[in-house]
Amino acid sequence: MRRDHLQISHGVGWALAILVCSLMGFAPSLFDAVAAGIGVSYAPVLGIALAIAALVTKALLTDIEISKLKTREQRLIQKVALLEAEIKDVTGRPPIDD
View 1 (spheres, helix red, strand yellow):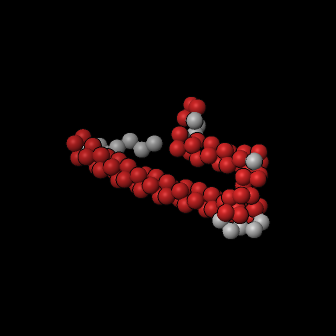
View 2: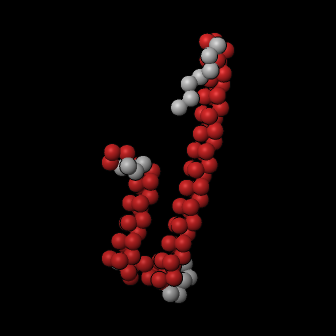
View 3: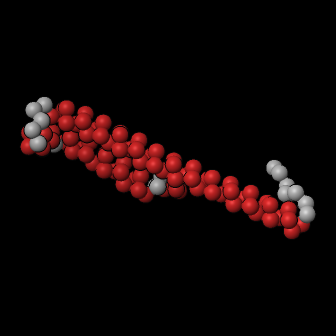
């Protein structure tokens, strides 16, 4: 989060994951009670299931973000092409290629 290395929304997710892992380590009886309350007979399996669900959710959110970025990139490429064509029409010279 510091110096824009990690977005705030991602930082909140990681902080929540750390909190849950800490809770599992410092208060295992609470975690066992939650597991028993939802019908899981072996509490560590609940932790594994939550970890898998978290990883799948993270993969889905990352895929959605990548799709948005690719769409934005494609739109920017199209805008640049239109601006280059307009520059060529106005000046009569082709745009400078890097």
